[in-house]
Amino acid sequence: MKKVCIIGAGVVGSSLARKLTHSGYEVAVIDYNSPKIEDLTSTLDIMGIDCDATEVKCLDKVKDFELFIVVTDSDERNIAIAAILKAFFKKEKIIIRVSKNAFAAPPIKELLGVEPVNILTEVITKIIDTIRFPFAMSVVRFEKGKLILLSYKVSSEDIFAGKQIKELQALRQLIPFTIAALERDGEVMVPKGDTIVYPGDVIFFVIKEEDVKMFQEHLLRNAEPVKLLFILGYSKFTNELLRRIVDLEGLKIKLVEKDLQKCEEIAGEFPEIDVLHGEVTDVDLLKSEGIDKAGLVVAITEDEEDNVLSCILAKKLGAKRAAALIAHTEYENIIESIGIDTPIVPRKLLASRVYTTLSSKSLLDVFELRDNLEIVEIEVPKEWDGKKIREIKCKECPLVLALKRGTSIHVVGGDDTVQEGDILICIREK
Image 1 (cartoon, rainbow, N blue to C red):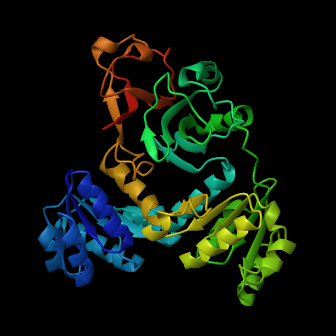
Image 2 (tube, helix red, strand yellow):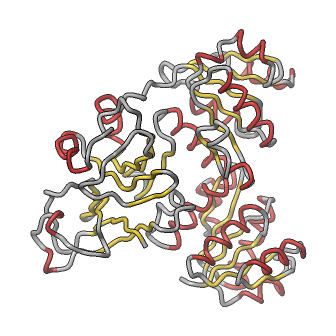
Image 3 (cartoon, rainbow, N blue to C red):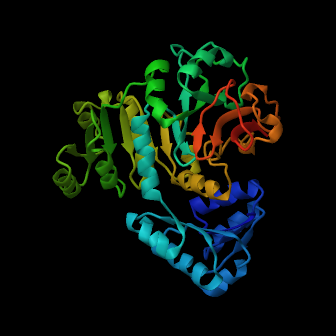
């Protein structure tokens, strides 16, 4: 699948066009906003088409393309375009962006025969993972959620600090995990056995979700659970988030919102949480409510400047971690340096789903800005049958992250034995 048509040249569509072009795909972008199309075609080797994708004559120009990614700002428009692609052009591979749960429900998916990516659900899942894994800088699920890739910044107190990778073998026998990559001073590498882990390094772990709790309790020092959560501001995400987390054991939730009517509505629907009427930047209010004891602060309003500023303030007042919803790369590039731990970037959440559809490289979103790494899958040939992983010498697969055998998947170590037909999930440097 090498020909991809993106419909919608906004932040998400433009970002996907850049990434897919750089990955070797032939890309067309449709939008009836001429300046956006001109900007893209001036910097990328793509086909830019200025027309209305709800018209058949417009889509006829890309009738030979294989995958269609429909990411305009309107759910209804995206659904209409998908319906035209189905009815008039018999296209089978269509991904549409939606922001309402109803449009992502199974009946709609079956009726249209498309793959809806619900941005609301993706954002909420990201926040819940941040609550559940507070020690992690990032959390990505792959292989249909069977495996998790966590990134973690090493402190001087951690058991990893000062050790070579090969010295962690005993720990890996206790709790199966693989260190997939290591980031140091902005450079990302695939570690070797003699690579030393230093404080300040960011290490990427691949692990099964069922093993994360034991991993956290036994191996990490900076892994206190979130007991107090502040939500700063109301948005379309708020109600769904509260419905998903209000019953989490041991979690106290406080919501700050300036709209009194919204406060009353939320307090009526969710009597278990503390609803505070006021500005999200009211220092006295935040201090009096214990922002310094917050394990996590979340700002997910439609105003990304408010999100960034309120999170910076919360961190300065003592909150341990902060997560902000952002859309533009200007913020994304500086987000860590200004004290925000977890950027929630809708375009990346959508991109990860697109990459999974295009190929098996379902971790590409993690390494989106790390062009020297890639994830590959290799089938075990007959001559490797019965060998241990550490005995396999293959430049295409220098580090095995996991092994798929039939319907099961395992995190493996050097002493695990492979069988002909197994699938090895590997990471390598380009």
